Length: 66
Image 1 (spheres, helix red, strand yellow):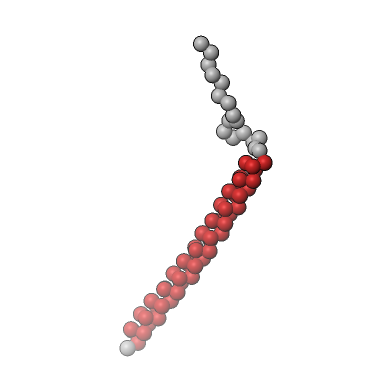
Image 2 (cartoon, one colour):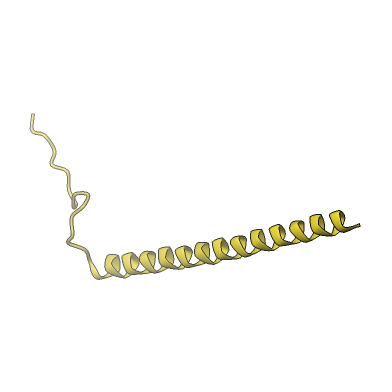
């Protein structure tokens, strides 16, 4: 009994069609956009943390002065 050969390309094959190339490029663009958004959120979180710390310090300073 003959074994059936599997058709198609193997995983990791770099021979992509134009449609696949377009989809890969679109996927990379979306990944980059996600990375940019995550970086923006990290920056905003860091600023909020600094603000909370400074407000807590002012509150503590105000409480000790009274």
